[in-house]
Image 1 (cartoon, rainbow, N blue to C red):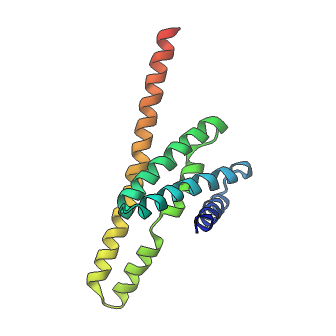
Image 2 (image 1 turned 30 degrees about the vertical axis):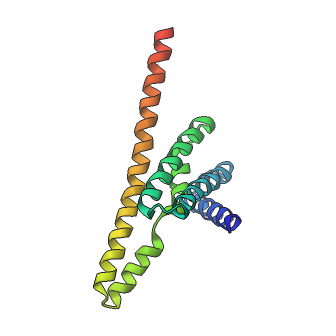
Image 3 (image 1 turned 135 degrees about the vertical axis):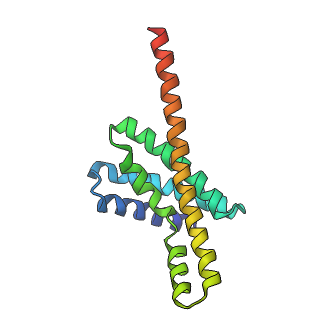
Amino acid sequence: MVITHLFTSFIAATSFGVIFNAPRKSLLRCGFVGMVGWIIYIILVNNHYDAIPASLISAVFISAISHIFAKIYRTPIIIFSVAGIIPLVPGGISYDAMRHFVLNDYNMAIQLAAKAFMISGAIAVGLVIAEVFFQLFMKAKHKITSRNT
């Protein structure tokens, strides 16, 4: 079961890297970022976390890994973060919400749409949190290095 999650999340993230024209040398890294984010999500959900905080935590890790890869490989961070976040996007929930709207089951449709919206918001907040921490880290690092020289 875990191997299936590893494989499919890697393929999904790598495929979106291809769709977004990521450099070929970055495709495996894009897949790795998506795979790590999805595995963190699955571990949290299996340990009784709700999908919303699990998505938030996974997005923070995805963004952090994307920042590290962007620095190491001198590549724009967007290449890794967009491809890496794809496995977390609540497409199935959004589809179910639309299906329930069409079937006139408005109560369930609104519940599902609200959950999809909150998961999407959690992903966005997770990306921002990691970005803020990274900027604070870089600012502190710059202060330390400028003080020593």
